[in-house]
Length: 358
Image (tube, rainbow, N blue to C red; front, side):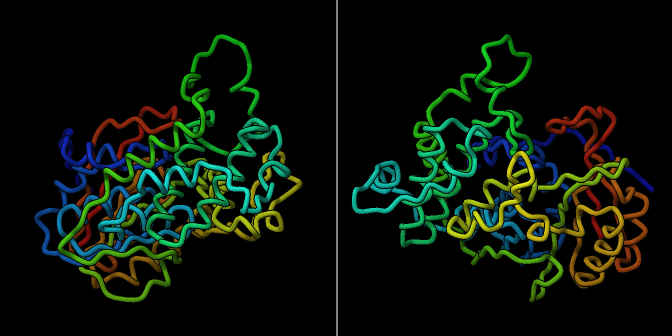
């Protein structure tokens, strides 16, 4: 296996346009490096099969590619709809004021207030979330609705210790102690203020493209259509077999997407009220299934250029992935970014890898 070690090729132009996010696994900081390794390839239509925040799909749209953003999680689909598919629609000041105002004519359920007391947010913050998601659901335009959901989701993330929903740990925010991590100023800033900040950032990121782009919410193995290039950034499984389970880490945001059905899908036996496991089962977070999942994915898209973002210390290994990819592609190039700090990771030896199969 040949590794080409390349340095930081960041371009401020892109980073400045894409909204800030604290989402685990975001490729925002290395998008320019990824582009540097694929820009010479002959492609126009492309699929971002595991879209996440939409960083790479957004970048490719910026490069006038015809992009399909996909993610199996509904809250991520809103990100792709707002930032990739959407060309012109923005939230007006009136829209934002409507979302952040209590309306006597509206009936406000109390799903968050009732089910998540003392878990993630304070009592008043839970009431605010119930009201805000209800107002967002009343918006008719789907692009405005997705921008608003993006702003709400980012506000929820920024006010969480570790930016995750994996533990019942509101006490970390509220404890009057000296802290070695986290940003108490961010935690204490009102939800409404954060919502306005992220709504404006999303608005500023909206731009029109000469090419038609769209967002879908599907299993990556079931997407129809042909693509010149398929970009793959699957959930990560460490060598110890521990997965990065986005459905579990961000279950609260996923629940907000089907708000009226949320209560019936909550696993009440879990302290942090995650979604029931039958809702979130995923072969990409199972070390026993992931080998077959990768093989099926490579087989499905063997007629496309296949680009895989990966970590050097994952399951499968880089060598195993390369061999699987070589079953379907004539040439596989393995590029190494070098040292890269992963959020919440203590492994200083892990490197960001990009496999390109042509």
